[in-house]
Image (cartoon, rainbow, N blue to C red):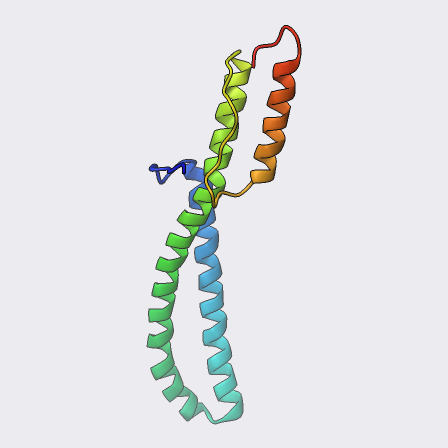
Length: 135
């Protein structure tokens, strides 16, 4: 099994993905808060809604903080499953352009884009069979 030890393979891409996940968590938290308070005001009275706001707001802030941490970790893990194969594809293509024989592209068990890796491996194999080519 191939194990990748570098966390930031394509930092720009990975940071954008983490930011996207964090924004999703923020939107869900804000929507939950607004719906909870709006629902309470509509179905009860403003005084009771004030009490709900007093009790609900801290719980939602805590859940938002936990959600942000989970989003960061999930974004890093998932982006790693995409950025790693992209890095490997680029390295393989660069090696072929330099006239080297990079060998087959192998990905980790949970990496994404395995179908693309398979197609690139077929292309490399076809390229190796062409007379006068080195790949």
